[in-house]
Length: 392
Ligand code: DI6
Ligand code: FE
Image (cartoon, rainbow, N blue to C red; front, side):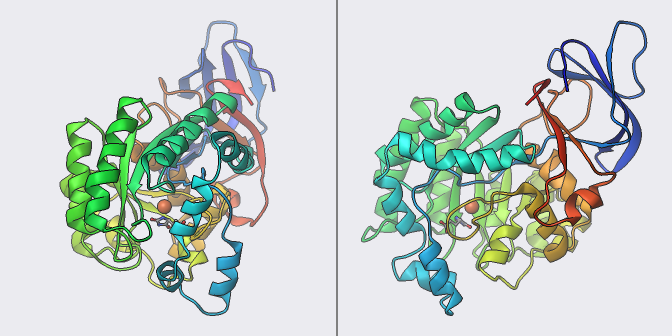
């Protein structure tokens, strides 16, 4: 498909938040300029989409896609019966990826990440969030963030970075000393170099306490950076309430969140990011409180959590499928979750919806409905990806 000037994509099914309508979408100069009825006048280039579904391009709002090595061996251990927490406490888990990441150069890390990035782009993803957190020392945390920024220079995709120094306690370190002497100084250095868009943490028994994360968030605030948090993934520790108090962009995982947590999130305007790939891969049995999120009006995003341990997933369509099958989201909720609410989880107001004035980041699919998009497993019905107005 060619888009050389003002263009109308007509005879389409348009996925709007809440439902699908028949109509057209008009693009000009990299922006969406009309949705619904095709504008008249002007010389528009016209493409008949033959009734295909047009959605906002997916946004993967939670990934650890930059990392060294893999954890296939640990997966084999877990297949023999070890739990994710047992493997972590035995020196596997996040800290084993830390060793592989520290040992990799910037070019190595980029080369390892790109095939995963390409898999997401092939499914239409236009924007991805990338976290640090496998360095746990200043050099490596900054190296990961530089690689994340480079990805947006070598591929047609936007990248939002999150500093995740508070991801795990390095082997042999004291958690409090690590936060004060390594994590916070690294955050300040990364921010000074323009490498950080948001600050994240892992609030969990095998990671950091509410008080420790609170210190990191205090520094984020003083630097003018928004926050987000891995919270209530394996147990209920109170991270969600902390994040709501800091008006976080998102809380992520939230399997063990409560009805009270949902109320706090709604009041704070914080997005709940559901990560069904991690739920699946670690054989979690407690599903997030979707009914409470719905009842209180908490926006639910869906993402891959692409990482080598708890969610070795590089398919946003599979994340959609799993959110429906495992968490019983409707396909429409799952689609809103990988578009509108995912953009909001990154604080992005210029993408994630089909609306005039937004960036022309959209996908044309060889399907009729969100259900058809989410239903098949391992099948990619992408017809055309349009990124900032350009098919690519
Ligand atoms: N929760 C997760 O699911 C990932 N990080 C986190 O805090 C797991 C990362 C890993 O297992 O390497
Ligand atoms: Fe994660």
